[in-house]
Length: 228
Image 1 (cartoon, rainbow, N blue to C red):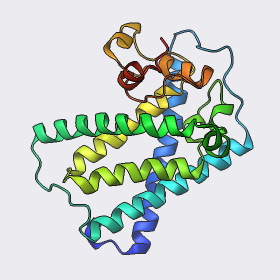
Image 2: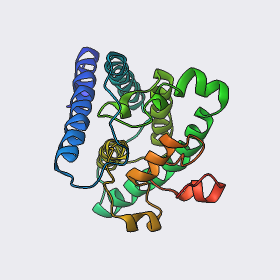
Image 3: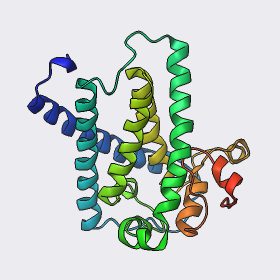
Image 4: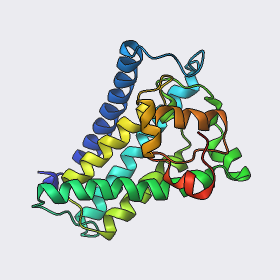
């Protein structure tokens, strides 16, 4: 079906998909905030501003462009998908995508905190010292596109299945949403298992020179940027 999509159909599908994923993230955030009994990490959530909504829409637009670029690469056989994966290969590929992207994102995030880059690109995100339901999407367009290009580079290097890619992207969205909550989602013991918990990322918003990891704290511990 996707192979037969015209480009106008791809454009519509891409934008609708990314709007849905954004709304899903917002809904998940609100659901956890209202049902979780744990104490807030910070006293107040960051106020939602008009610029937050504009940047959120721009992030959705950039994510849609990345999806369209991925479709173009796939149609031109630069990305090849495994059509008949086994359950084991889907599981292993999903884990591999998580670990590889965690490694790449650590250095990408660290580079975003270099003084000049931070001032131009990443500083807006860190105006959210505490967070709100849009914090995940308050990003400079170059950050969003850079993240997407890293994923596409991995997909060009190996024939992942559409299932493993979909599972990874869903995990990424949920993890990003949970990471920007103002309540700890994970049990305290998870920190000992190198998991990038909600509090782990919340500490990064409080201390910008620590905790650059996303899914795990492995690289922060290894390179000396970890804050408990």
